Length: 414
Image 1: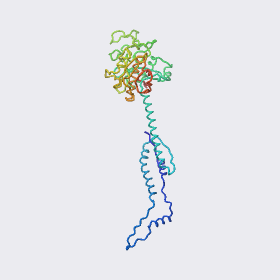
Image 2 (image 1 turned 60 degrees about the vertical axis):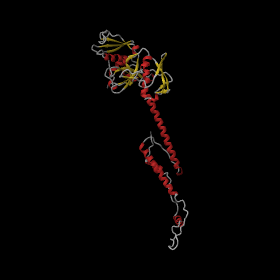
Image 3 (image 1 turned 90 degrees about the vertical axis):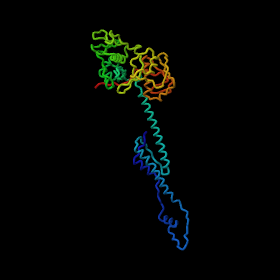
Image 4 (image 1 turned 90 degrees about the horizontal axis):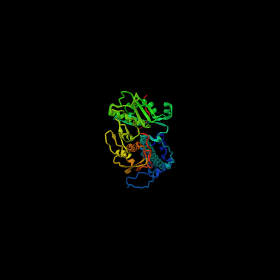
C-alpha cells in the first residue's frame, strides 16, 4: 500500500497554522485586574474573625485551555506523521486555511488520504490481476503470432520422452537469418536446431539429429548415418519418434532412410521402418503435467498414449495412471464431454468457480483440455463456468485452438 511522504517543511507549515495564544492587555489593565481580585488588600486583624470573601472568577482558563488543546492535537498527530515519513509512497500536496478552519482542514486531508490510498490499492490490485491473468497462459494461440514465426520442436526430457515446445521467433530475425519471410519447418529446423541452447531451457543436448534432414513435398526425409544410436533401446526409440512428431507438424510423414537410400531397419524392430505418420489416430494424445528434475512444469503428452476419439482422450485425463505425468484436472472437478461438429463441449458437473483454485493449476486444466482437443483438430466450448471472462479467455464462446504448448523465446548458444 502507498503512503504519504512528510518532510520538515510540511510539518512546520502545518504547525504554523495552530492558533497562537497572546495576551494583549496593557500593564495598567493587568494592575487594575489584580486590584479587583483583592491581591493588594490588607491582611485582617488578629483580633477579628477572618472575613471569607467569595468573588466570582472570570473565565481566565480559556486561553490556557486553547494552548493545551493545541498541544494535545499536535501530540496526537506526531506519531502518525512520523509513520508516514518512514513509509514512503505517493506524494500529496495540500494547503491549509485560516486559523478558524484548521481543525476542519485536517479532517478533510485525513479523509482525502484514506480515499486516495484505497483507490491506489484498487488500481494496483487490478493491474496485478490483469498481469497475472495474461501471464498464466503457457501455450501459443493464433493471436500471439502477429510479427512472429513459429518454430516447433520436441526436446528430450529427463524421463526419456519428448516434450513439445513452441518457440516464437521475430519475423525480422528470420528474414535476417534465412533471407526469406516464410521458411518451411525443415528450413527452420536446419538453421535453428544446431544453435538452440537446450541446456538453458533445462533439457538434454539432443538436437540436431544425426544425419541430414530434408523435405520432399509433404514428406520429411531423415537420412541416418551408420551407428546413429536411435535404436539402442526402447527408450531411445521413444524419444526419437516422439521428437519427430513434435517438431514437424506441417508435414504428413517422416521417411527414414539409410545413406544408400534404402529404408532404415531399426535393431529393436528387425524389419524396414515404415514412414512415420505425423497425423493419424496414433498421434492423437491427451495432455498431462510433466515436471523436470529441476522442478520446471510443462504440459506434455502422457507417454505418447494415443486415442481414437476425443471423448475417450478427455475422459482419460481424469485418471492419473503413472508417476511421471500428473493429471491437470482440478480436485473434485468432474465434467461430461459431447461433440458438436468440430466443437467439443466440456460441461462441468457442478458450477465451476475458477477463482476458487490456484490460478496456475486452473489454467493448466483449461489449457490441457484445449491441447487435447487440438490434437484431434477440434476446438472447445466450456459450459457451467461462473466466470464469463478469465485468464484472457471468453467462456461465452468456444475458446481459441492452441497453435502449440509450452511457449518459449529463442535461446541460442553464444
